[in-house]
Image (cartoon, rainbow, N blue to C red):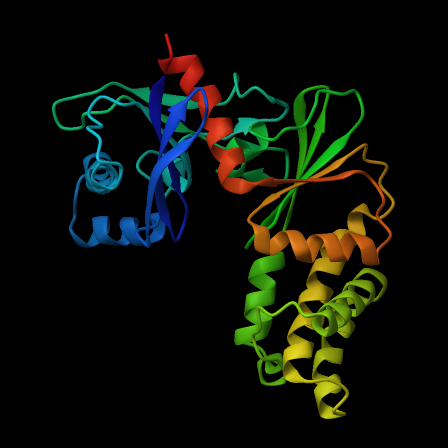
Length: 317
């Protein structure tokens, strides 16, 4: 057995996992709020040299990972996905233009060897783009999905702040569409006039699910700019509680997102996320009568599987 270190470095979060290869068992993991945005800000304040500054952040994280795993990690390869390859990251890499192979073999990857200052060989993975869309970080999850190679179009959905819909055909990533579902929902809940009409709730009870599904249907069928005002009128007229209204609004934004795929003949739809999105999207699909085979894969497992392809190509010999 060999090991590699998985790094998922997003805008607001930093995560490291020690992964056993080839079983892909996660042996240990650590996370912090040292995301790319915060790291970039600290680097600028200190007037530091970019690449070594970011490597120092990673090295401190690996020290914590070593303590968590009770293992010596010197020399173990590091695979980095996410915003580390962006303009705010440790090194900006160009996006790879679609199509991209699902085995990850043609992704743009920067390789750096082990050095006296940084004791890990490293692969920094860039993102992918189409003519009018892009993703950085999600490509590693998509290539780690369990989709079978087929000549028909399949859809991978990655929910989040900026939800990605990724089209797969003949073993290739052929299309990307980004929906600002999560960001818009957060703005409406916290910054808009609707904030006084909702109460944040993670409780997906039968009654909250009912209002969520009503929101999904309205979001998919009506003009969104008009539909979101109904969140306000439902409270003005005392039709529903603030908690129910929160789930109604959640349904509105997800229904608007999924309206694009209601009548698309995808062979299979794959959701890659954490468990909290599974119940939401399952209920939304049911509400919209989307009947294609629906599969779910945990995001963490898809990530390490996708990164294992990078490890195999550059470090497993």
